[in-house]
Amino acid sequence: MDIEPGELTVGQLAERSGVAISALHFYERQNLIVSWRTSGNQRRYKRDTLRRVALIRIAQRVGVPLAEVAAILALLPDNRTPTRTDWERISECWQAELDKRILHLEQLRNDFKDCVGCGCLSLDRCALANPYDVLAAQGPGPRRLVDPAGEPCHPGSCR
Ligand code: FES
Image (cartoon, rainbow, N blue to C red; front, side, top):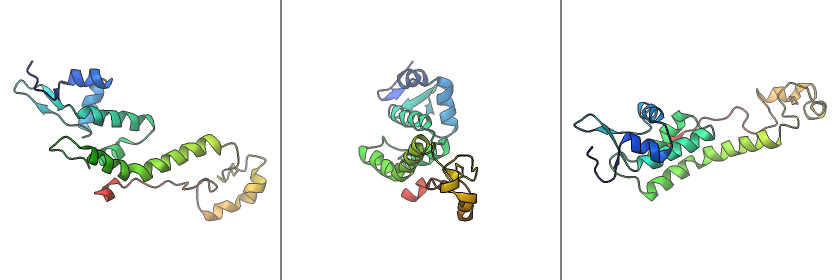
């Protein structure tokens, strides 16, 4: 098996990343990572693919949709190994979206013991916090939580 320095086989990528080969193939079909084929039709990956896979796994772990991950990764250069500056740029681009996710997780952890203004009127506090569901006039969703509808990520605006 001919492997150039800085290249990984799919097995090596799987072993070092801790991600199953089938998952790596799935990431590739989703254009999250790219490979090329040797003359023997074997996949090869650039070593920096490990960093992309790490980002994908962490993002998945915190519930970021793969479409958002793909949009962010698409901002990295294809024709060379991304530099620290490239990674800093996409981190900054993603910061607002990730801050919003953190806020929502904190709300889930901290605020769901109280009335969230969702219209259920099922807690004793609802009569005070949302009497007769007056918050419905503001729109749908849990009105006492910020950004109840959520906004889509627009990583493309960072180009
Ligand atoms: S918790 Fe739903 S309206 Fe109060």
